[in-house]
Length: 112
Length: 113
Image (tube, rainbow over all chains, first blue to last red):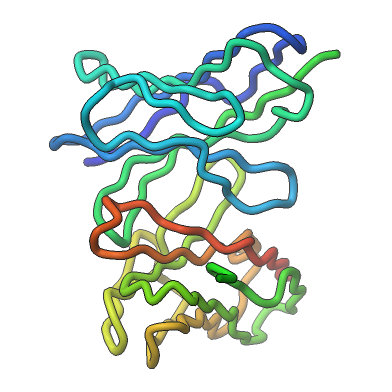
């Protein structure tokens, strides 16, 4: 069955430090992969997406993610975290036009 | 374009009451979906539609009904609200050529007491 795992429920980093959020997926075909961010009480904002081609994809707000087929991973990274990055982050795999499977989310806290 | 809009933003219901969550999109997308978001579980698909007049069940459909009379609108009905339906509900839409990318509304936060 298709599934997405985000192993870290909660991560705390210091402002200015680098960040990596992990995502592993289970999917038979070539996946369409997404990262969304959700600020408290807000909706979902798309950070970046991977369909094919270059395995390193750039997104908004300075985020990037790397698709590694051999590891079934799509980890999200940012070189230097800002206090405004504190939010919940969701990895998702597109199953079809109507169905995305989401991970449980990783809550990011940024220390001053 | 307004994108995907949802009303209301917040709602409190008593157990047994019914209500309809509204969703509309102005992008002429064929596909629309409803998800619920619960802590520690990400988003789960409730119902979806592949076009006007066509709907189907997702992962967690019990207690919900949908209909799709127009391309733009996709309301979600709670028939008899239960505390287990306390959640945040998101509507989403997508187009056939969009490589499964979905556009999400701002969400409706529902509390059932």
